[in-house]
Length: 297
Image 1 (tube, rainbow, N blue to C red):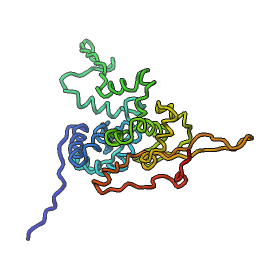
Image 2 (spheres, helix red, strand yellow):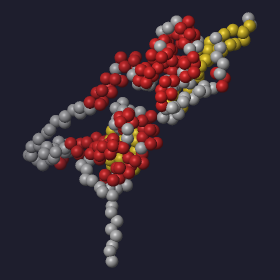
Image 3 (tube, rainbow, N blue to C red):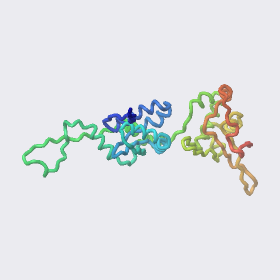
Image 4 (cartoon, rainbow, N blue to C red):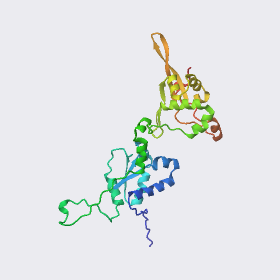
């Protein structure tokens, strides 16, 4: 009688947690688009592997949550295939400036980097045999990694404290290359100025795209005149796809007066009318709320 032999998933011999993570990276790179991989996976760095817990470091909470929500199970399965045992994946924020404990990581690094030829003596005096000379080896100062040097240059200086490079706004090349020739530089400046006053997290879906402001404030942010702001807000393409507004009025002892405007801003980029026709993809006509149906001068 023939016996059916159930094959086990292959496991690979690795010399450390860094080798294991590199194997996982290679596999994920083949499975994911280049944009997603370069944005979310490539910046991850292994911090250690101890007692079945594999720790990954992410640069910020958004990256940590993205990996937890979308890749945890896949990375765990790949690591289990590499190590041949059950793995508990832990993703933490570790960007070089946090106070995360790194004892496990430093211990693993010292074990991997030691070649066994030279040992640094930290023996207590009572353990040294009388008359026996010991060779003292000076510990080399730890050199910061190129990544930490880069981060310190970007975020750790007084200059960076003023510029705040971590506070950015995502702008697509499509917006600059396809929309700018259609709506003009002034409209682009006003749309970006309006977006800078709002908030959108495409990963969590959190959206705050209504803002109370004034024509003069919007003009100042976009470095254009108030007249230009009014003209742009009434451009048909801008009204249809990017910006809606209504006048905010208040009652005063002297009657009703204008007290600025309320903007609703589209935070993602629609297809141009030409691309809609070419690709057969129609944009949502009413992306804005019903109260913004009728704009006012």
